[in-house]
Image (cartoon, rainbow, N blue to C red; front, side, top):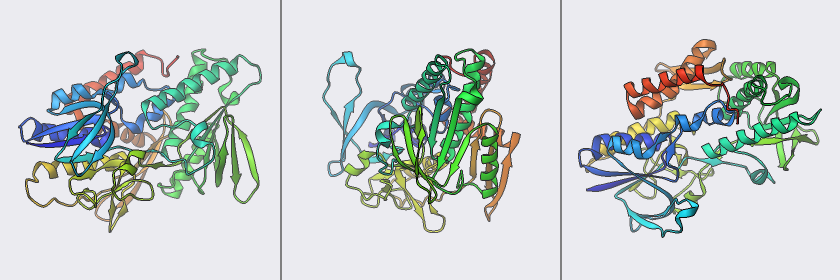
Length: 430
């Protein structure tokens, strides 16, 4: 029996394991194994809601072991240390608590290896960035940011005249969505008397973008609309601003051709770009300049036909449409494609993956969203905003849940979420 090992349980990896477990694992056609260093899954596009205190990850996380038992695959809670492609084996290090002592690493053989390792923050070599900023690479990062934001608001309220300055580096979707949510979080914390600050005066949020406008993947008209909306909520938008260095409480920037200046920063969050994780450099596979594994049209590494890569750690370049962007919809489409391709491979040539861009949606807080939909044979753009954009943005997560749980369980989770929002505070109070 062949062994298909998937490393990484993100949006693409978990869906692939679920689909292969249903089609091959349950029928005894293959042993499907998912490896991840975390015991639970959380949909990464919603990490900004954890960082703003809006969403409790423990409520929305999915236990890998439970998902594995329900869908015919095996889950191993471990960290990937190395890959021996000649021996077709992985070295895995167990994840243990402090009171469990040390345990030796183990080997795991594979027939087919799928790397769904995700991506990590790219600091672009900016001095001090790696040591002095927060990131949103994981649930742990998001929770740590909110604890620091909450603590900063409480401490500032104890000192008259003190402000909380949050600097967000990067005007893409992550930076914009977090900035919008933090405005509402600061107001909610004041409402619940968690701090005594004036949210409009004492909590200052800035977004620094090196390019000419926010959300460069959206049409210029929508970018301008998003910027106007954020400014109306008191968020400072600085485009054409490059970060030169970062200190613990200061961000040094240069605006346009002007001289460098220093901006006070109680908290700095880096959301300016991503790259493949460091483990990618140890595999002996060709990588892109963003440290992503280069794959062919079948999503196989161009160096090893037994190794596939999907999601943010993979560099797939379509000769017609260009490079697939690091988005959840790309990982979803690649998981669907690869699940079907591996299930019917059995000596047959693999089909070619084709990415279809359905557009992009960006949340601007609890009551606003903006984006563009792409449809038709010519990829016509349809700008959306207001209620329609909010509904469509919410449906993206529902689609992810349906891919993992089916319609009935996804509907039950959605109903539970709706009830919880009406029975609990709108933001975490600790």
